[in-house]
Length: 154
Image 1 (tube, rainbow, N blue to C red):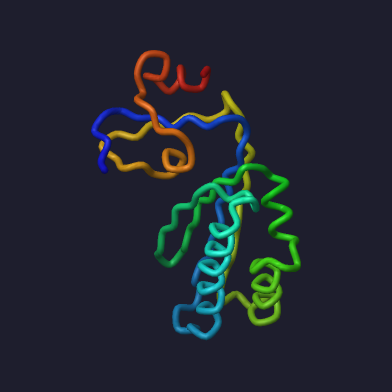
Image 2: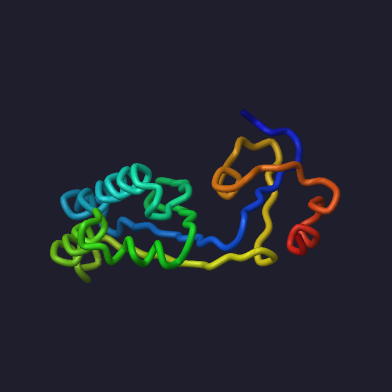
């Protein structure tokens, strides 16, 4: 459903925005990047089946650089998942280091940001629920939520 009105997402309390992705540096080396590419859907499936692990929502884009934006309940839950020996992440990370390491064929990266009330704002116009608007509560951006500066204050 497209929301034609100006909308903004509201989140209760603190949360984490985790950007993660890969870059295909040598497109013909399919045997090197395909296992990396296939690892993320397994992790996402695991995370959605176990909401207690802390993932709230994600968005994903494909190109030469693949980007996932993930929203997590806490930094602790994100780190616990990354270190959990029983999760899909740790074996994928170990396999990457063994098969690719630093050979330059496939790049991987991540950035992590803690957010709390008053440290973020957003607006969506003519958009379906998306990003933080899908992770949180989508409301009309009017009154005290009309401008970016006002949304930072609330």
